[in-house]
View 1 (cartoon, rainbow, N blue to C red):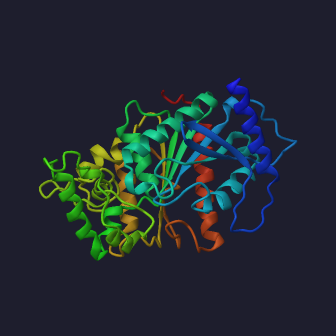
View 2 (view 1 turned 60 degrees about the horizontal axis):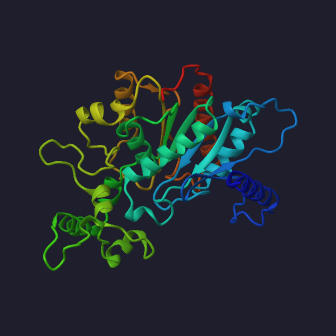
View 3 (view 1 turned 90 degrees about the vertical axis):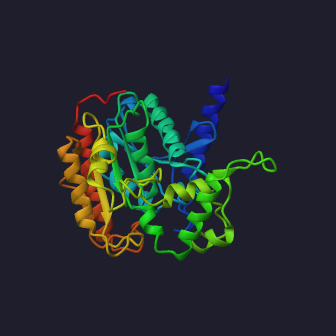
Length: 362
């Protein structure tokens, strides 16, 4: 009975979305299916237009592109996904018959990131991968991350065990939060407070002290992220902790993309740690990324990552990976040619993943 009711709700939502008029560009109404991939966790699957010439009947063989955004993003954010990626894929007859695009909401989406962790994000994304793999057991799954979503993707593919069955990952704007936030004067003050809270043990008068879960002073965090996002000591430390003084190795849980990470660490723990037998990789860095300090050589950084992956046997898309000229962090306020450059690379990557007949390891 519960399954029947679930389908009624799903079909009702689908009908409502299909008939909902697009009142304005700001509303961003899109037809699709809202999936509950785990308790209180949802993913929105964009639907292609009705195509009477399509021969696709085996939905279990459809491939799925899962997308997860960065800090503050939610479904339909950033806009380039539903405004450019989705129309491009569904406007291509071959890709439309093979792929579906899904935007994933996790607990950290929207305003929830400040009290979350990259580990929780990755574990929830793994549940989403599992859901769609069970829904489409013969299809492939690619996970595309934007900004901090790249860190979630990286943690999932290099830290979780067993590794979720992904056929590919796309990293769009894989910037270092540590390097992005360091220029702000308040960052160091917040890090000092966060470190103190994390390291202060419970005392007789505060036996249940939250330590790392303590919320940092809003009058300080609001100088960067506004008044509506509470941020815990542990999350701030994870984002901004400086590298180890002796080894230079990252200390923060999500410090994967900083330009000063030693070569040995990159080989063993980040790009060199991507499974080489099953996962294909596409790296898309933005030339005009507002969150990357001007002194960082973006071209050299991406070439370094690609070189490490090649030497470790990782299946990197060297031809399409690189720095996107004139691209901003979330691809907003750019010329159409920039968006089409990104779209072309994503489409080419999906075609490459789709033609691979190798089985993705469970």
